[in-house]
Image 1 (cartoon, rainbow, N blue to C red):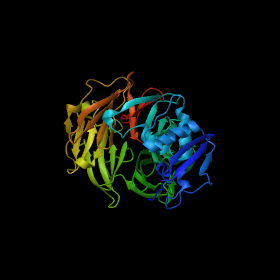
Image 2 (image 1 turned 45 degrees about the horizontal axis):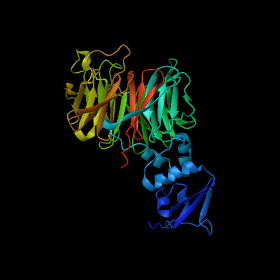
Image 3 (image 1 turned 30 degrees about the vertical axis):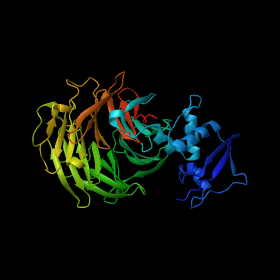
Image 4 (image 1 turned 45 degrees about the vertical axis):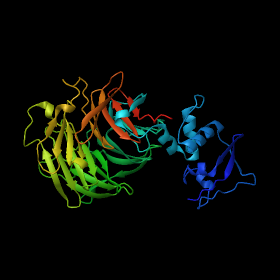
Length: 442
């Protein structure tokens, strides 16, 4: 890339700034400043004085210009952050601001930066982090959407259909699955525009050349733009459906095997290395836990495990959540006391190897129970329990730290994305945002 070392002047709102083409090149081709260069990164000239006039806020321009020079973000107290974010969006520098605002994600260094409260119809169902640092929160039949600046967009209301799960296909697309409408199988799944709440299209289930009503449950996504959802209908459409997220067309369906429960699945996880889908139906939705791996190429279940062959007599061993750990060829499960268990993926139907070393909380769940949840992110394992989230590292999943908000409150769901961790609390429409502080400026 042959960026010239030319000096260039900007008149921004009446203030003169001088910089170099190299500094502006740091903004990238898709930025406002990228348009000032030709295809060979030669600077285009505005006039003989090489001065560009921009009718924008000069204080914010100074901050953003310094960001391009140093990669450090310093926001003076007299500049509102929301104003800076607005100006960053105008110049196409939002990604630069986001990456400078917090450091690389590290669960052991996360710090509680903010709590968001507000009115909501009913208890929280799920929270899902967006790819750019925003999130979506489901409460009853409504989904509240926040961008990375934590500004709320118009909510998405499903009119009495209880939201089961949420998933982001990109920064402006949200898939929402819902259960029955007032006892009828008229839920389903739709793709919505996150910024406006507009429904783009619904995902239909077709059986015997007829469109069927169905309730959609857990969601998962694959890198080749497929959407998976557990489905439960009135006819034979019980199982896991597959749709193309670009066209919205159904492209496959995996029907339940006798004795198994796929349509009631609580957790779906796409395993890219194995090219399979993990499907888990967990207690208390079912009396017994079912975990399986589906290969859609061969149309068969290639791995399965259930506690039905070894009945559970002690409630503390009930599996509450499960997540596949491909690097260690295992599935991690958790019970209600945050004991971690591990199932060997190389052995179908094997037993759970429980490890109580990870137990943080002993005793019974509080009256308002929030079952533990699991998540994997950049080699770290996370598990929620009551009012804290535990962080485990290494091949042996050693407990290294825990995140706890100062004033308590049970965590009913959490999600990681855009270098942030979002924790949804059992209190009405309250969630916490955790970030990794940027490294100190030396």
